Amino acid sequence: MTNPQTGLNTGSHDLPVSPDLDAFMGVRWTPTPLPADQRVPGYDRFPGRRDRLSAAFPGERLIVPAGRLKVRCNDLDHRFRPHSAYAWLTGLTGEDQADHVLVLEPAGPEGHEPVLYLRPRSPRSGGEFYRDRRYGEFWVGRRPDLAEAARLTGLRTEHLDDLGKLLTGPQPPTRVLAGTDALVDSATGRPRADLRDGELAAVLAELRLIKDRWEIGQLQLAVDHTVTGFEDVVRALPTALRHHRGERWIEGVFDLRARAEGNGTSYTTIAASGAHACVLHWIRNDGALDPNSLLLLDAGVETDTLYAADITRTLPLSGTFTPIQRQAYDLVLAAQSAGIAALRPGARFRDFHQAAMRVIAEGLADWGVLRVPADQALAEDNGLHRRYTLCGSGHMLGLDYHDCSQARADRYLDATLEEGMVLTVEPGLYLQPDDETLPLELRGMGIRIEDDLVITADGAHLMSGALPRTAEAVESWMANLLS
Image 1 (cartoon, helix red, strand yellow):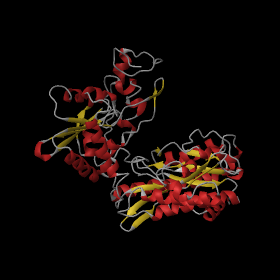
Image 2 (tube, helix red, strand yellow):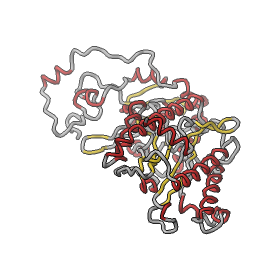
Image 3 (tube, helix red, strand yellow):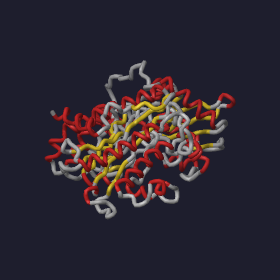
Image 4 (cartoon, rainbow, N blue to C red):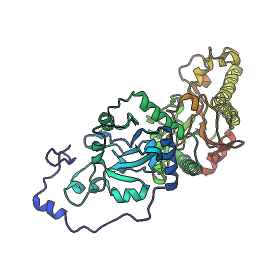
């Protein structure tokens, strides 16, 4: 709660502070400056990014908030992650960025001057540093002061309290990344549905579609840590199989690796055993593991720079696929291989999905599950094969695990692939346990195989190739890790 007399965010059970204690807390503190040579990772990349955004909106003020803290329960906030567009423009990715705002101020023919409005480090006076549970240094850790933040980023910095002054009086044409910070939206009069601001969100997404060499390196790091996390999971299977909520055990094992090596997971880990794997976004993870069933593990590590991996493997919990499991797995693998083969510069984004779906539809027809020819099912006015596969076969990958989703269709979904784009290919089969169109032996299996790839000059590079894909290789890999 906020104390109305002090303005501090204090808990309801805080002890009173005497004047003597307050005075004592304000003296005899050793200076602890940040290293003078410390910079955000990728420091040299960010001015060019801001210049590209500036060129898209000449003469307009652009406001990109980091976002605000959200209460988890009572006086405890969720762990904070800044908005991806803010991170992409500033390089600032830490939990200390809550409420901060980047403003690109129009500066005549020179474009824009970027200014970072932030809450600087609390001084050792006034009580905030030890009494404010939400922002005080003793409660949540140190923040840079204004000069330190300027050195870290190369940006002019101003106190967050001065943002309100900027937004009063006559205003230039202004766009806001709306829906990110309700207080900023309110101060600028920008509703979430404002179409002008929607264009800012779209351009920010589109500018991120092609990754530079540094970004690809960060994405590869995320993938590499994710591979290690999958290895951790396989080694933990004997213990997980004995636990009454083995899915939670698997989730915890992977999430430990994600927090140890990066910022955490790219998204909530999906650890789905048996029929749970037929739920595309199963995150309850509260089931036991049946050694006769499959485990669908969809998980990714997010780096400290907030770049995301997104990988799925479907594993036989016994260590060996049964014949019917292998039949279904091999169909999904063939679909994924067809999708990967369709990746190249100049190919339409939708091509790889259509290639994968043709394999799925033909396989289902060959099994007798699909009661119409594959060509008929694949027609736009039909789509009956989707009962068993339902969703798309991949998406862009970057700072968000579903990256650039606000880009306009003609720049993304209906556009062509270009060198430097990073995406996933992830076809799946979801054979529901209560689906009477399926033979009994197929019911209750969910299989997805997902890999991360970067478009190259002549095709695509498999970034997650360190994880096996074929059924035989999966079995051998599991056996080696469990030996």
